[in-house]
Length: 341
Image (cartoon, rainbow, N blue to C red; front, side, top):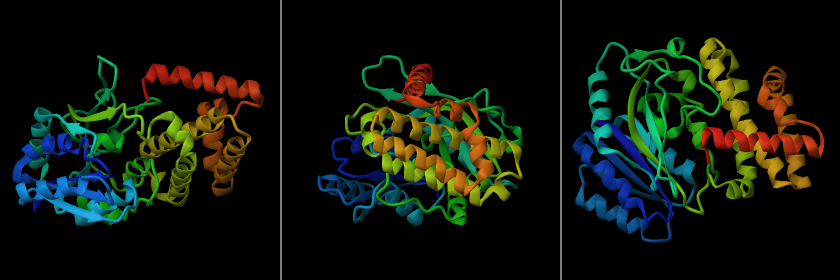
C-alpha cells in the first residue's frame, strides 16, 4: 500500500499541469499520483498517458467524461490506494523541502496506537503581480508537531480557516464518512473540508509551507466576476453546507470547539454568498439573497439565529440601498485586510 495518494483533477490543463505533476514525482514509490482527466478537449489526456508510461509505479491516468471538479475528486477518492489522500489542483504545485517533511511525518505517525485522521500544513498564495507571497499559517491556532484533538485547538479568527490546500485526510476516513461531492459544481472544495470534520478525531499540524496556491488566471473560479456569474453554484454549495450542519447537529454539537469552528466557517461562506449577490446589483440576485436566508430559516431556526444575528449576518443584512453600500464597503476592507481573492 502506498503512503500517500495525490489526486490531480485536470480539465484542459495542458498548459500548466506538468509543473504540478513534476513537483509531486520526488515522492517516489511511496506516493501514488492519480491524474484525473475530466473529459478534457486539449492535450491533457496525452500528457497524462505519457506520465503514466514514464512512471508506471507512481502515476495512473484516469479518463472520465466531464463531471466537474467535485466529480474528479470523487473519482480520486474511489481509486486511491494510499493510506492518506490529498487533492492538488493542476495549476498548483508543492514545495520540495516541505514535501519531504510531510512524507517523513506521515511515515512516523503510521502504525501508532491512534490513527492520524488529518494532517494540516501551511499554504502559500502565489498571486500574479505581487512580489510578496502571503502564507496561511496556523501556528497560533493549532499545537505544533504533536497529535491533538478538537479540544486542544485555539480560536480561529475570521478569514482564517482550514482549506483544501491545507489538509491531508486519512483515506479510509473519507470512505467511511461517505463524502460525495456534487458534479458540475464549482466551490465544492468548501464541502471537501467541511463534511469530514465530525469524523476527524486526531490531527497534526506541521508548520511548513507545503502547498503553493496559484491565483491569477482570468478564467479562475475564484475571480470575483466569475463567482458572480456562477452565483447559483455558490448558493448550491452554501445550502448543502447548511443542510449538513442542520442534519448532523446532534453529532457536531457534542464538541464545543468543533461546532464553533464549523459554524464560523459556514458563517463566512454565507457572508461571501450574500456579498456577491449584493455586489451584482440586480433585483434578481437580491431576491436570491432573501431566498438563501429564508432557506436557512426554514431548515433550522436555531442555526438561522446564530448566523443572522451574528456580526457578519447583521452586516450583510443592513436595510435599504444605503445599508447594502455599507455592507460592500465593509467587505472591501476585510478583503484588503485579509488579502483574500
